[in-house]
Amino acid sequence: MKSTATQSIWSVYLIKTNSNTLYAGVTTDVARRYQEHVSGKQKSARYLRGKGPLTLVWHQEIGHKQLAMSVEYQLKRIKAVDKWRLIHGDISLVDLFPALMGGSPELMGDFPELIDDFPELMGDKSE
Image (tube, rainbow, N blue to C red; front, top):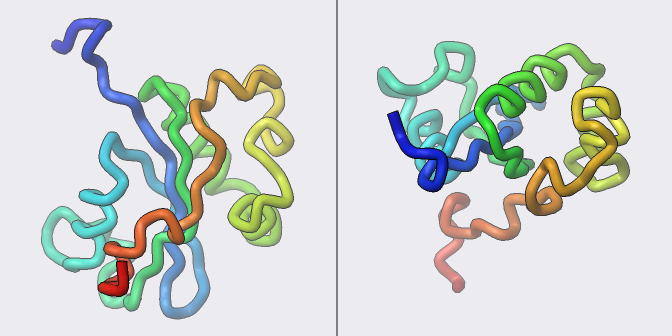
């Protein structure tokens, strides 16, 4: 087991499929996990296989694994319209889940980052 000082930071992410459905997941490395999903191989989520092209549309650092998994579970339960509001920055995780997030942005790490921060994931070679 890792020591407290070196524990990984967990993130929650949303991936859009070719039919505009959204998939929520958790990981300690968003870029690596997204590439695993895109590959469609054994480590990809069964739900996403054959539903490409896939687009990573949102992710946010959460911190601890247990909180990240709780946020993922809640994201899977909310309406798609609220997920899209989150993606577009119209609402935050604190707004969506105040009891879970404790109303404290510092529990969540950085503010949401859109895929624009990772052009290499989308095959953009312009940078």
